[in-house]
Image (cartoon, helix red, strand yellow):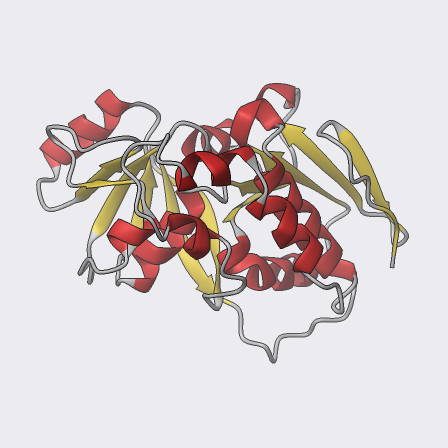
Length: 252
């Protein structure tokens, strides 16, 4: 059971009765390398990443800049490069689950560069475990954290300088699911649906979007895998890890 999960803004701590401290921090609030980090970007980086894996991608390379993404694409023309915003020369796709869900990515490597999600993952690249998450992989992420039994978990809330309510809601939901398997997602999804990002996507403020993007980002547990990012040489690489329901799910 969780003694307290703070429903407020980032920079707060949730103390788990078993001794696990759960921190919710924005990217700029990271002052040390966490042991275990869950980087949350619901709308849309890690929803897109999950869809890429569902469409057959083997791995996703998280690029630190647009120039790095283009350089990787130049060295590996068969890789698929995607970015935030409208289509651009050198990139194959944009950061939209609605636009990516029909792509054939079987066996391909995707290079992803986004405004917040990839930045957050690279900020904690030296952590012993880095998970990237959204609502679409929430339960699988919670299951992996249960098996890890860590003393502490830092949730990196990537959007809006750490204040994006869709990311914070998702982070808090996953944290609750680690210790309370019966936690209802309804209130957390409601907060995400009412977020600034959801409104901007629905109103067409954000470019490179599809009308179904918000709904796709709010599909709870669409996929049965968590997403683990590790350093492979100089690159931060994201891969799926399927978490079967038979895994030991005793609360931490």
